[in-house]
Amino acid sequence: MKKGVIAIIICLILIIILCLVEIFFLNNKIVEISKKYDSINSKVQKNSFNNTSSQDNSGKEDEVTEPKMTEVEFIRTFIVLADLHSVDATGQYNFYAIDQFQNFDPFVVKIDKNYTLKADKYYEFTFKGAKIDGKDYSIKDIFDNFTIVDIKETNKIGLDQIQDAV
Image (cartoon, rainbow, N blue to C red; front, side, top):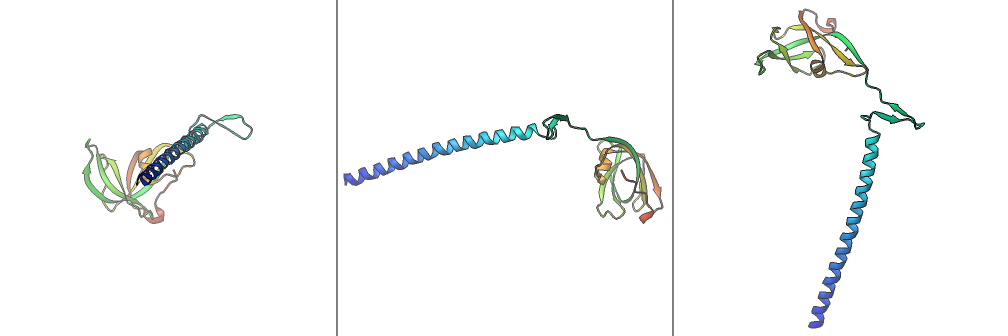
């Protein structure tokens, strides 16, 4: 019986030793992988678009150009789907649900109280601001990035509406 217990104890000690060796090697692999990840990550950060310089194929450093901004004024026609009868916390703005011809994506906007808009009426919104050349602007982008200069009611419908490019 003592030989059987001794054999079990020896087997348990061998299993424990093998587990410890395996843990040691796994830890070394984790450290090695972590170092590779850090190396790759630092290379990516150096070549990032947000960096102030980048390298071309000749190895020379060139400055990254800023996107070109252009001052614009344009008109877009929207239909007011609903006056939401809601005022912002400052009391200076009303909320309206609007849509653009053939857009089929209603959008809630905040409009200065100086303008009184009515549901089911079309309005020409004149916007002004700086645009980034080559960027496509959604309705949300337009209202977030440009200032409303004027809003006029219009009778134009369908393809007769003014939908200036940004």
